[in-house]
Amino acid sequence: MAWNLSKDERENLEADLAAAIPYSAEEMLVLDGDVDFLRSKATIAKKLLEMADKCKE
Image (cartoon, rainbow, N blue to C red; front, side, top):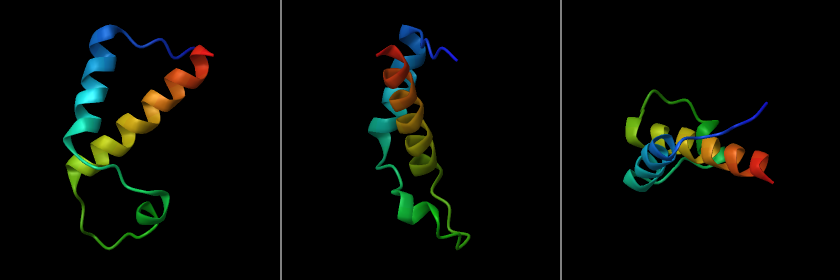
């Protein structure tokens, strides 16, 4: 599957990543009901950018 991000998509994901510190893998395993939506968006953005960069190679 190709992960070709447009310039706008990449900029939006990078802005989400810059807005908060992503959750670590260990933190994501703890479901205590306390959700930080900015950190959740940053975590998803980080993963999508990593996937896009990996598919570029």
